Image (cartoon, rainbow, N blue to C red; front, side, top):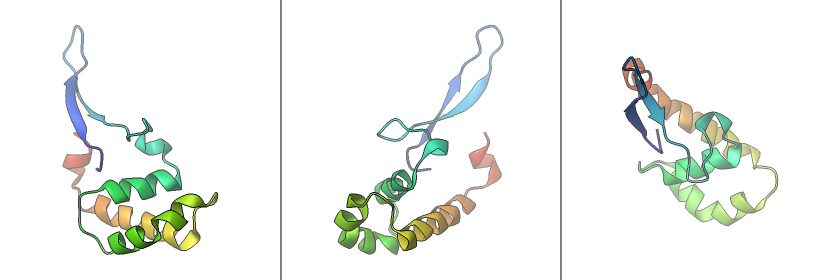
Length: 94
């Protein structure tokens, strides 16, 4: 959703078109994201959202701790779920 995807033909003998989801800037697959990676993806997401002001104000505090702060972690999860629900199954599973 944040880092985009590409459609590629990976078939050699028989054509097979697949959607390749791009990794993060740190070359991490979306399924392997830690809480800090989810936070950074939301910060990079080019949508204006209510968490944006909080993230700007608290960025140093959030990114400097070893354990990701619990209320921010829950907000990240809820926000990403809300954004994913906006996608239709056709857009997710091409």
